[in-house]
Length: 108
Image 1 (cartoon, one colour):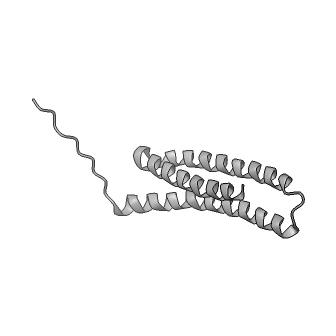
Image 2 (tube, rainbow, N blue to C red; image 1 turned 180 degrees about the horizontal axis):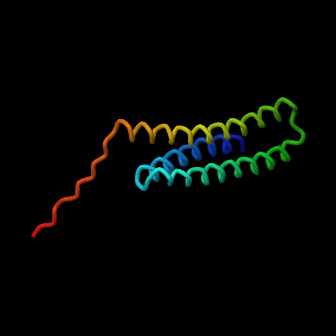
Image 3 (cartoon, helix red, strand yellow; image 1 turned 60 degrees about the vertical axis):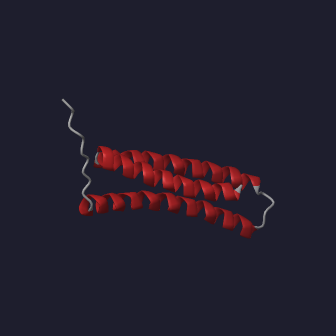
């Protein structure tokens, strides 16, 4: 199960980066708040998995419990840094990249 938790953190991080960056680039900077909602959702999922996992490993050694707790904390850091990276990428793209969308003229 711990591998699933790590995978959830990595995939959740990519979802947060991709969706926040896309929404901000396509619809404007205020749409970055949707990324905050995703971030909070993934952190809540992480907390519920942490409670469930810690109840499951009652007979584990204290070291194993500490490692498991650190893995869940690492997931939160991955999620938080993913949102921060999307904001930094947005600022960089807005500052250094000009995106031009050209539509062909109607024939007629």
